Image (cartoon, rainbow, N blue to C red; front, side, top):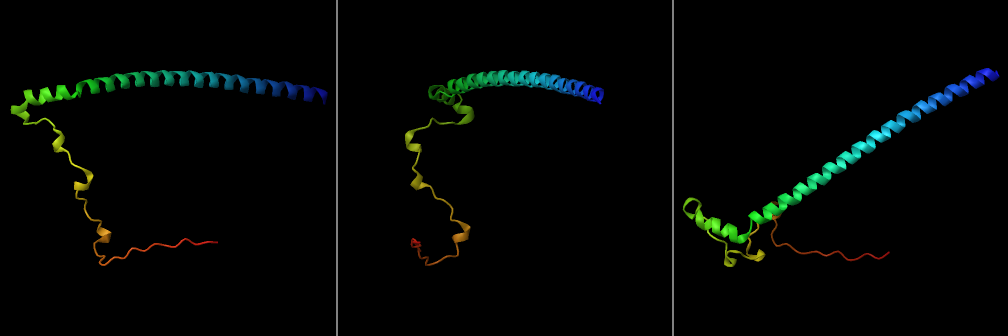
Length: 115
């Protein structure tokens, strides 16, 4: 009986050590994948920062104004002026379709209920 227990214990220790070995390699692989992804994210963020800087450089108002003047014959673009902008109150919003049939509407306010 002692030999059977000894053999079962040795087999159990071997099985647990094989499992731990596989988990260790799996963990190391995941750590490597995570580091690789973090490097890729950092590189993508750096590229995005460069693209945003280029976009800001290309959309400078003085540059766009000059381009509009140079290409006026082809594009018929005019420079923006402050008087071309309006305020929100000047916008005509379409009426909500669900409210079209309501006439003589009365505003109702609920009273606060106390326990």
